[in-house]
Length: 131
Image (cartoon, rainbow, N blue to C red; front, side, top):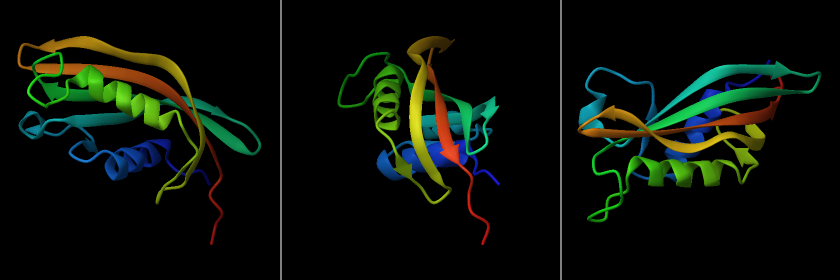
């Protein structure tokens, strides 16, 4: 059985980035920014390990650039991308052996009051032993 790559990435974000919530998007999430939306996009499985594509989108209130001590979506996405790429990561959901970037952080259009920046990574992890 393999652990969820999404759960492992969320755990890294939640435990190592204070003030950012890693979650599914819910009604009213715009009132609790910044939020990191983490989702799986498929992958491949070998005999020993699995390579899952994971996409992370960071939602923040405008402005686009850092001002007044608050980080913009692209700034936060760059920090997450850098931290996740420096694995391995030991999480409560499982172990991330390595992370390889697929798409670097990019600022995307969303709304006039919210910025979103996203990136894609490949998460390599092994099977979780059954107890």
